[in-house]
Image 1 (cartoon, rainbow, N blue to C red):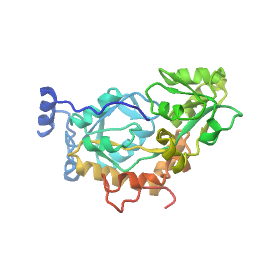
Image 2: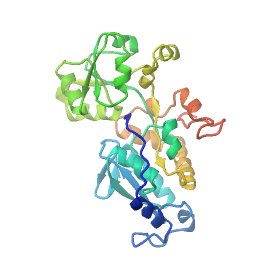
Image 3: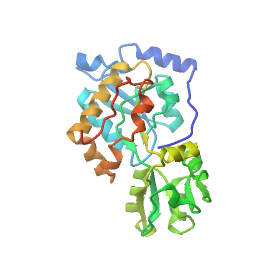
Image 4: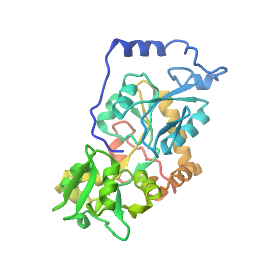
Length: 310
């Protein structure tokens, strides 16, 4: 999910106390019989993975003390492999980032986009999936490239960076809405031609609101020359997601990344993406710039992003 929100680093005494408490024995909520290997991962409470999430179905939803959705299912699989018990803490997007950066939680998940700025304040795992540029369109309509969008009425949620890309499309008219429902309502009514939202949101709406008669299409990313000419078009490119952890959680990040990489190879990620209506070919194969963005930043210079089909 692409959002424009400031990075937050909390400095209150309460947060300092939270960090100090993390160094203790773990308290009453610590599971019994935690293995030495699991305890060595360095979670705030041994054997427990404290996770900040926001309600963002079908990526993350807290239900009965569990996180469900694509990101939730991936993390649940990983946590089981590592012997960790998940304990969710529901917040908003800014709270997710702040909870990690102040080390009140062990991790946050839910389509968080990797960026060079965010990695300065925390650690990103290897990408559990890559979010392709998805479009909600009326059934029977086909748009494939940026050129196809010229002069159209294009909608998205106010504050999402797709706003910037839409404004860079020649002759296109931006329609910004407070939430995804507004995008879908106007698309179904024919007031806009295309809606830019996270792909699984569109796929879920197709099932839940068949009366709208919408379909999901994936935009062919703009060329390097197009982005050079109009830098705002970069937000029409796929972006890499990551699970986000505190800067000091290096052992935990490496362990989770190793499990994510294994899920590409053993087919588990393809299964989960398909479960939520996504196309593994779109979600689990990186664009060419994914490696170059992170090499020498928070990954070695020879880092290869995980992918299916390797």
